[in-house]
Length: 73
Image (cartoon, rainbow, N blue to C red):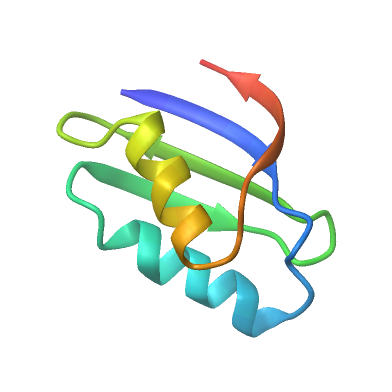
């Protein structure tokens, strides 16, 4: 399993975090998603067939582009 934590500057409310968690959670292979309103950080864990490229593309599509990769496991 791969886990990444990154910043999403567009997070401004609870609806933002809910949208990110629901959309990424529906992506095949994504095991866990945690979005935090206060810190604007998102942590995602996944296995195949999900990939970082697919996660980034989906975040761009829903207007929550990732920025500033904080941690790669």
